[in-house]
Image 1 (cartoon, rainbow, N blue to C red):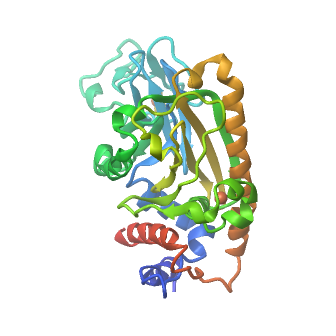
Image 2 (image 1 turned 30 degrees about the vertical axis):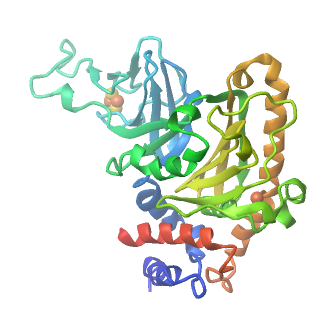
Length: 385
Ligand code: FES
Ligand SMILES: [Fe+2]
């Protein structure tokens, strides 16, 4: 039996009720062909977070590799962020090789010097009709522009839908916005802005899904995060409802750091201790508190390595003013400590998936419901293929 049919056979067990279900098989975490399936069937068909708006200043073009796909993030002088496949329409040269400002407003291929504007239109094709002719009657530049990717920026997170046929992002996020409407609205979330110098990166030697799964449950809190558990204990955590595209946990014992002025204007006074930590599937981990917000995006490098990128957001001056720099830094440091504590567990799960004795494992019918929900979300997309 080939690898793919073995995975497919196992996926039936993933779809069982939690009492008898097994998790995704080892191959889904260790195999390069499964990594490609994750890219094409899971990530590309949904809304994957690939970076932050702050990564792309005006008039810049920023190339990234997303699971092997060359992708180009651009922002024109009017502030609009657009994402394209980073490939020249001519001979398929990777169009932009390194991030930089394009003062001319044109993106130029280094091979034969074709140029594109920030809207992706093909603007220049030097000598296409011979050394003295930049046009040719049989070549139509209007159908040979860059290939766009559906893009939305929400909470400064750049989401892309590579297949260009997912539901609109507004529909995708709507159930989570609805869930949070008792505390925030789309408008009051806009009070938050990216904090200056609040990005951090952590490399984990694990498949991207294990980083997601670890964030989905609070079960490990007492043993992996004893410090956090002392002021925000496991028994004060609750499972949030599982939406179509998200799941996660909440805490009813969040305390904003002393000395912070300001909370999101719509947040009710008697609910300040609530905070929620959902995963917006497939790869966007969120933290909503009354005084700040964070995103961790899990960027898969290969089947056994992932990059976690985090950005914090704050209110008004707290986001940008120099006098709050120490506060921002201390928040970055305290989240870094918590996220770093998880790494040994995530990497340990990856090592365990080399064992032939492990066949997807079993779930606590109470504590692991979200983990299975995510496995089933992934399995459905793998089998729909
Ligand atoms: S490959 Fe880009 S101009 Fe020829
Ligand atoms: Fe954790």
